[in-house]
Amino acid sequence: MTSLPPRPKRFPLSLNQLGTPRAGASAAAAAAEAREPLKPQGHWQQAAAIKARQTPPSGLGLDSAGVRHGMVQRLRREGLGDERVLQALTSVRRHEFVDSALATQAYEDTSLPIGHGQTISKPSVVGRMMALMLAAPGAQQRGHLGKVLEIGTGCGYQAALLMQLSKQVVSIERLRPLHDKARANLVGQPHIRLIYGDGMLGHPPAAPYDSIIAAAGGDDIPQAWLDQLAPGGRLVAPMTAPSGRGQVLVLIDHVRDAAGSRFVRSLHEAVLFVPLKSGVM
Ligand code: SAH
Image (cartoon, rainbow, N blue to C red):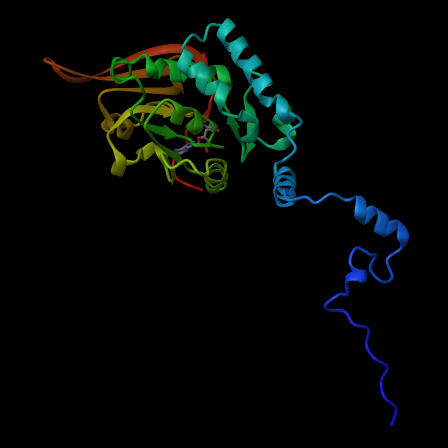
């Protein structure tokens, strides 16, 4: 019977083993290891690296605030005067709502495709509609848009802007994939309620609304929207022009005074929005 050779002692290490290269490690590797500083912040660096990988490449890098500021300056020069709207446009990162391939165009004043045949509206038009709503007597008194109903959530960009100017936003989308996209884009915004449904019916459970804004245009304003507009409230929407060709912005105020309750309608500039359609898909 042969006895086994004694196994090398691994633990505890004797004092003369401390600080020496591991058995088998090359001298060069040992030297590199010795130069490597301790990194107590290593976990943070790793987390930041993972986050950076998750952020879709926008082509804008850290300069997106600068580019956004440039867009807002141009809108201001072109006549958009409401500082609260300009502030909202400055703070919401439009490039994060569009496909990363389009991100470099996100701060041009153009509408952009968001998939499923739909488009995100031009910042100047979105800004104009919000300024019109803020100019309503009710909104002026309140200092904000109150409770807002948006028809046509799309990618959620306008809902994010509206949230900057109000207390609560309810936004409806009829296309499931866009509703889901907006949900992902607006995660962590507790005061924006996203509804998958036909916005032509409004959303009665949360009515009445102080402000109603539509991002899609039909031949007329659905009765449900008027029924759900609070007294003192204002509605802004695109609608087929009286000529039957193209669209115009229509503004409706729900006026209630000694003479009773009525809707006062005014027509504004020509616009181009996707069609308002009924039903869901
Ligand atoms: N505000 C959106 C713009 C989206 S475009 C944004 O910032 O991205 C207009 C949207 O209205 C489209 O997504 C379209 O699907 C939606 N839409 C059209 N008719 C609708 C209806 N009846 N109910 C709800 N959404 C509707």
